[in-house]
Image 1 (tube, helix red, strand yellow):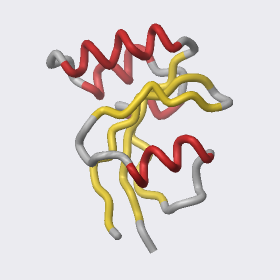
Image 2: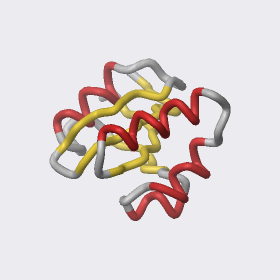
Image 3: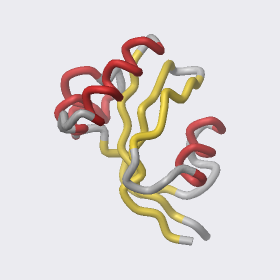
Amino acid sequence: MPKATARHILVTTKETCEELKNKIEAGADFAACARENSKCPSGRDGGNLGEFGPGQMVKEFDQAVFTGEVGKVIGPIKTEFGYHLIEVTKRSE
């Protein structure tokens, strides 16, 4: 069964999500941006979600994690919780 390790930043608007993605792609630290901006409790830990398998996250998030490129910032991804930036740090098949 596939497993993934990922971290994310959850914000309320697509615009904020895009601004953060641009900052990170320009060299800002993902974990620092998560601590400063994420609305998810995982933000305190740099957005770290640990390891999980398919079906453990909401559908849109799950799809991004298990099809997106490892090590690349993915998003904005809209879910019922808001807008996410996701970075898959590891994935096994």
